[in-house]
Image 1 (spheres, rainbow, N blue to C red):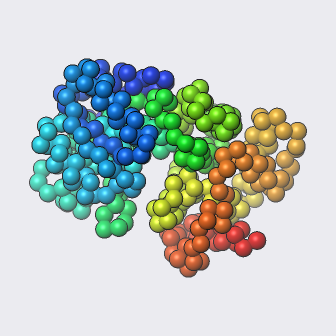
Image 2: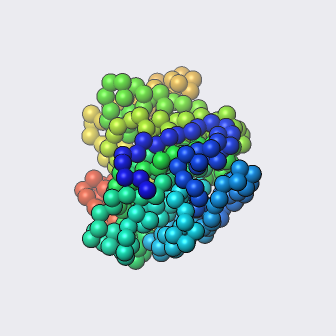
Length: 365
């Protein structure tokens, strides 16, 4: 059980999954494999099982983890882990699977009723070792201290330093998602890096812009060949640096975009993309001038000879730059038909309400 601050050991690059048995031996004696049942995760599960069988490392299994994992799945996982005497909880897949693994690891650190932890009656003081083999470079969950589960139809988030992963493997060979899921991952990083380029200063701002330019290149490469391992390796590298090296507040589009995604069964990337340009339209003039600068930088980077001089030019240029992703940029493009009153009810503050109002207005044009 971990009781001290955690520094995540990140292994990134092609074939780094082969290091898994050696890593596991550093931290425990038996691992619980937590996974979903999409094609990529199924293939990863089989690969991991073969690796562990060949290495003679004991493991147990817990599957059927769906997006937006439920509290009940965590309860089931804790029961399995205790019965099987697992001291490592290993997530195989994306952010949702990792949220469930975090919940299980935390549950193993609690004596008595697990509900007391999520009701705030108990504080998490230790947890089992959390590991992640990630197929999604965009979430950053492996480095974060949040665990989000669905209870009673609503999302609940707990924050604890014990929810950080002890180790994470980012192997692009195990992330062969089709076009649309891949572009959703890319847009989550795009929104994060764009916001960082907008609000950070000095060296951090420069770093964010450089990562954003690399991301645009990566999106273009994957739009040409979705199986490009070199581009997927770059995508993992960008994601790791974006979450590890940049210190910034949450993108204003992220929380409300996640709500839309949760309520309407959309990927988080699409939940954010349909609000992104609405958010840009709500910015103050000083920030709009910065948007012009960012758009001009990206246009020059991609070889465009069009000079971006106005905010309208900037919006057009940014939309053109996102064309290879084919991701929807308005509510209408996503196919959503949400009643105005219901949509505005999702807002928790004035900023979010302004973004949603602008999204509705853009759809009406």
